[in-house]
Length: 210
View 1: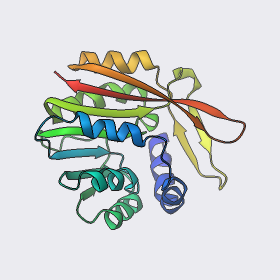
View 2: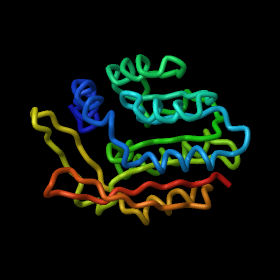
View 3: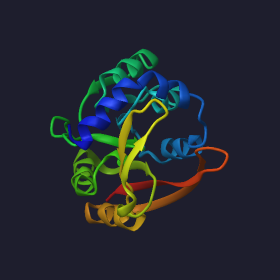
View 4: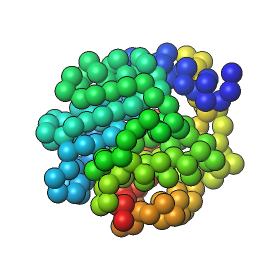
């Protein structure tokens, strides 16, 4: 079993635990509001990559129920939770590294912390594919934990399940965005408390397709 397979299997097993742990997290709500405000006029079709149990979708659709929300995730149990939580949206099981089956025409793409589970080699192609799916002036939101690639490795939860966590240098992600036709890049940094003793910096990027 390779890194991706083990990580994907872990997310499927812990879907209920993840949904419960993060259902009330409001740290990023101001950035979600910013995404909604900055969408191009007439925006209606939004893609969420790595939708998990549908927490972001629920927040967004609670404020903009007119949006046509489509979400993908590699874990079937996550998709089942997202569908139950957001009956007006469309969700499907899909590996975010395989976006060829989606047709362009989105006005917004949002990806909350998918990037930490995407290798550095795959990141470049993933950003390229997101650019292909977005219409001109479309808005791209992505979040991750910036860091040196050498820090990447397995993280083990309290139940013994492992995920492989990739750190991406902020400058490298921004370089990929520019290379694939994004501009007006806005960087928002948040301090996230993993515990009382452990804090880490999270990066949220919003970029517009030129």
